Structure formats: C-alpha cells, structure tokens
Length: 251
Length: 150
Image 1 (cartoon, one colour):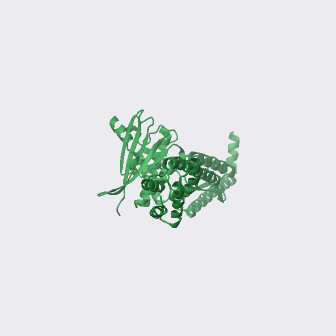
Image 2 (tube, chains in turn red, yellow):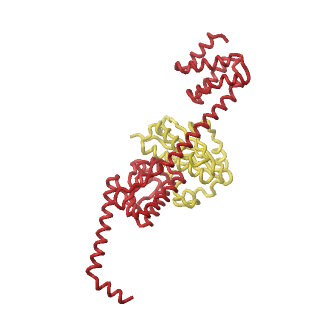
Image 3 (cartoon, helix red, strand yellow):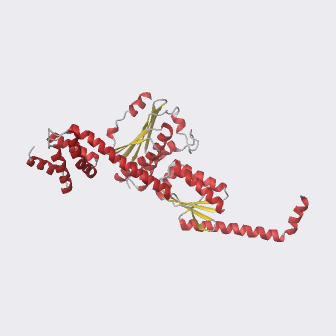
C-alpha cells in the first residue's frame, strides 16, 4: 500500500489534525508488514490514544471502514488488542468510580447544630442502603446526645425520591420522633412534590417548611412554645405548692 | 399469558438506545441517570423527567430486590401522532409474580422494609403500563411516557 493511498484514507478518517495524526501512525504500523508480538507492541499506543479520543463505538465504526479499504489489514491481531485495551480502560474507570464512592461516603451527610436544640441535616445525592443506614445511626446518636428538640431535614440536594428513599426518610423521621424530637422537612422541589403525590408517599407525619428560613422560624417557634409550657409548669408548681403537698400525703 | 411473557422476555436489546444491566445497587442510580438524560433529550418538562427517572429507579430496584439481576432497556420513540415518547422495559429472569393483580394493590409488599407502593406508583407516574410475569420464568414491565404539549 503506497503512501498516497494511505494519506487519502487518513484524510477520510480523521476529523481533526490530532485524529489524523493518530490514524496515520496506526495505519503505518498496521501495513508495515511486521507480525506477532512486534506488531501488537507497535499498534498498542496509537490504538489506545484513538480509543480515548473517539470512544469505543466510533472507533469500531471507523475500523470497519478501514478493514473494508485495506484487504491486508491485520484484523486478527487487532481484535484481541482492542479487547485488552477496552478492559484496561474499564478497569481504570471502575477504579475511579470506586475512589469517588469512597470520597462520597467520607463526605457523608453533615449534621449541623444551627441553633440551640436544633439540628440540621442537609441530604445530598442518592442514597444506597449502606449510606442511608449509616446516616440514620449517626443522626439518632447525635440527636440523643445533644438532646435536640428539633431536627430539620433538608432534601434540596436530593434529585429523586423513589419509594425506597421515601421509605428510608419515613423510617428516619419516625425514629427521630421516638427520641422525643420534632422533625421539620424542607427543600422539596416542585417536580419532586408531584412525583411524591403520584407515588403516594405521605410525609404528613412531619412539619413541612417552604425553605430553610421558614424551617428555622418554625423550629424556634416550637422551642418558644416549649419554653412557655415549662414556665407555666414552674409557675403552677410554685403557686400550687399545697396541691403538691397533698399529693405527698396521699402516697 | 405465558406466550406473552416469553415473547416480551425476548425483546431484542439492539432496538434500544440504552441497556443497563442491573446486578448491584449502584446500577439503580446508573439506570435512573440514563433515563433522566434520554427524557431530557426528548425535551420533557422537569416534572416529567423526574417522574420517568423515579419510575425507572423503582423498576431497577424491584429487579435488584426480587430477581437480583436483570436489565433496564430504554428507548426514545418519535411518533407521527402522540409526540415523542420514552419507553422503558424492565426484564428479569427472576422468580416471577404469582398474582400480578395483588402486587399492583397499593400497600401490598413481600419486602419487609418497603412501602408497597412501587408498582402501583409506577403506573400512576407513567402514561402506559404493562406487566407480564410467570412464576419460574421471569417478569417484564413495559412503561411509556409521552411528552406533553404546553
């Protein structure tokens, strides 16, 4: 195969100067007449670059085109090499995913004390069962040790709430309430609101706030209410001392 | 019925834009993301994109929970009348469902931590809903959502 024809083929294949350079390199090696290990070694680098540049599907289509044009193209040598390279790339991307997952779980969901007796839990991203489990445990622990009276759960960062995530949230809310704290849910986006209604997920068990500001206002109102009740009790105890004394006699 | 399950189980995957194999919990998120992207490409409203993504999430989770492995196939369809449509087929060769009508009842579940509104919820989220199942063969759910005109 002469240089002229090869150059024409390269011209047809490559959309950019960079691609043309890679194709030229690959085709030169492929028709060089070398065989076996030597050829595989020579093809490896340009093929790897092309794979990263074009992606698997695109490269496949272009290679088909090349094979049709060059009858002596070493297809049999190329195939295992491509599979090997794809495998390597996949392994590499799997590793990246693994690292990212690790990072995500480290980021976790922070539990922030935003006010006296008020905890804020901003939820971000998706929830698989491990992450959900870890979060509930951490939240319950924190709510119990801080004796929080209100837990604000913000789902602004959650893109989809399906029945599994909905179920997890309901479970979490119930558990927090069992610890004696109130739950205020906020950050439900309009598109999610519609989906939740269609799915029939019911969050009526908790207070809903329009946004974080509203949530905080509700939380503070709840705390004020409680403080008022406590003052009333203290006052009643003070003025009604004899009543309590009578109770003493009874027992 | 039995013929229908077999027929649906053999839907060629080549006809679809995206095929996601469900084998791990992470795959559920992948399927959801793919559905979201295709619905966005078709110009669905944000609310409908969310509904499609949620339905796919539900379908993928059902596969993962009850059949362990299976696949979610998604395609865009451009029809003359009716407008752009997204079609999702969830296929598994799992244990199958004995009484499909019962499963579609709101609140019914065999999974202890579930709300039991998954399948009936999917039906409400989508425009069309079709399910075929046979004990010992597997389950196929096919759903569609049309793009709405405003």
